[in-house]
Length: 561
Image (cartoon, rainbow, N blue to C red):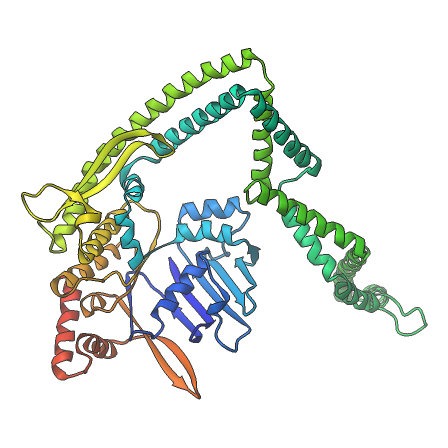
C-alpha cells in the first residue's frame, strides 16, 4: 500500500508531501491544476518511462520518493531475487531522480537499481487504470489476458507455456537439421562466428554491474586517494618530527591507563575499553591503507574497463538481450542449434520422435487451458453482469466467446468479449457496439472483479469517469468505495458524485507567485470538502450547491445512491 509520496521539482510542483491511507482517496481540482502530475509521479516510482521534460524550469533535477507498507508476498519474493530488502519496519522506500540533462537514477531502499528491476517491483505494488486503458477493451487480443487473470489457475497457464516452449524448441532444432546445404553452410558459419566471439568474451553473470562499479571507482580514484591520505596522515606519526598521530597517542593513553589501573580497578576497566578502541582504530587504519593501495588505476586500466563494458553492451544488443544470463542462454541455444545442424540422421530421427511426444503434450495442455478458460468465463460473465447491473446497466449482457485457433504461445483459443446492449439482441463485438460511457463502466466492472483475485493492494483510477454522469456516476463512486474495502484506491475525478464517496479528499490547486506557477496538494476537512464538491457541481459555491454537496456526502457515508 502507498503510504506517502514526496514530489520535488516535477513540472509545476515545486515540492509537496502527500500522505495516503486505506480506503478510497479522491483527487480533484480544476483542469490543469496538476492532478495528472501526481499520477505521473506514481508511474515514475513504478519504473515507467520518465523524460527530462518533467524537470521544473530552472531546477537541476526532479526527485520523487514513495514509501510502501504492508508489502505483498509477491513483492518480497522479487526483492529477495534482486537482492534488495525492505526497511527494518517492513516499509519499502523507492526513489527516482532525473536531471535536467536527462540522466536518471533509481534506488530501492538504500541501494541503486535498474529501471527494469524497478518496473518488476512496481507492477506488483500498484495497478494504474487510466482513460486510455478503456481502449484495451477494443483490442480483442487483450481479452484473453483479462480472462486468464480473472480465473484461470496459474499452474494451468504455466503448464501450457512450458509444453509449448519445448515443442517450439524441438521444432526449431528439426528445421535447423533439415535445411538445405546452402542454408546449412551459411547458418553454420554464422553460428560458429557468434559462438566463437561469445566464448572468447567469457561473459560472467553480474560482470557488467561489477565493471560499472569498478569504472566508477577508477574515475574517482584521485579524489578517494586524497581522502585516504588525510586519514593516514591523522593516524600515523609526522615523519618530519611533528605531532604524533592518532595511533601513537592512543597507544600512549592505553599505557598510561594501564599503569593507573594498577592503583584503581575503575581505571583498569577504562584501559581495557580504550585498548579495544585502539584495536578497532588499528584495523581501520590497515583497511584504509589497503584500499588506498588498490586505487592504483592508470589510463590503460580505465580504457580496459571501458572496452570490456562496450563489448558486453555490443553483444547484448547484437543478440537482443538485457543481461549476462540471457546472453549465456543464447550461447547455449546457439551451441545446441549448431550441434543439430552438424548431427547425423539418427539425431534427426530422435528429434522427430521427441516432437511427436511434445506435440501431444502441448495439445493436452491446450485442452486443459481451454477447459479452464470456459469454466472461468461462466464465473466471469456472472460476476461482471452483477457489477454492470449495479451500475445501472441491468440489460447490458456480457458474453465471452472462445473459439479454437492454431496453437500459439497463449494457447489454442481466440477469446473475445461480446455485449448485447438491449434484451433480445444477440451479443456483438465490444469494439463495434459499446459507447464511451459503457466502456468506462465495463472496464470498472472488470477492475472490480479483478480486485477480488489480484494480490496488488493499490489501484489508481485516473479520470475513468469519461462519458458517465448523474445516477451512473453515483453508482461508480459507490462501487469504488466497495473496492476500497479490500484495497487502497486512489481516484482522480471531475465528478462530484464520485468525489463524495472518498474516505479522504485531496485538492490539487494551482497558484501564481512572482511570475511562477506552483501546485499544492492538500487534504480537505469536511467544510472545505463540501465547498469543493459544490464547485465541481456548479462552479459557483452557493447555498443550494452546498446543500446538494452535503446530501451527496450523506448518501456516500450511508452507502446509498
